[in-house]
Image (tube, rainbow, N blue to C red; front, side, top):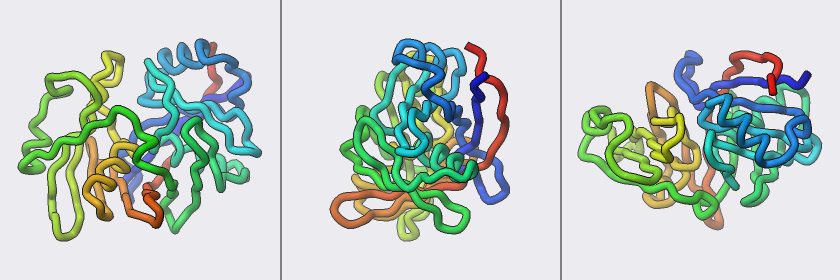
Length: 226
């Protein structure tokens, strides 16, 4: 029986907050995009990862309704989990490209490119209170990353993420890819509070690369029923 392992990604120092992620480390047990998409839909996480080759770091990422070439919080959660199993996770190989991963203290980091992120639009609001007051989801179509400065000089931001895909995810609790896009647009390092209390770090690197970091906490392991 194949296990489904669950972690929370972008948790606060006390382990609260974060976005739940499902990881199937033996991804070959769920072959084919159709079966994986149905599994992700049934599980209902914002994203589910199937690890096809733990030695090479090959991963396949799904929301409940679409396959993703790249995503932030699933890669951070998967890299952390593989290391917990004593496996190498220096590179995770996605459809978009190879993603370097590493740890710094309690944070797990990935490095990617904003152009790997498709369809996420950012919108600035006048205050954190205005972001908090938005309905779930706001009217309109397409992925919306709503944000406001908390302290512009310090680079701290309040944000919420709304996929607006018409599937089971009305609001994304934490979104590394959207944070990557926003850091690229603003051209600076950021500390983002998203959702009910997730914490995301973003920083610019050389050559157009952007690094995203966060804490991860394990939650549950149980058999994956198919």
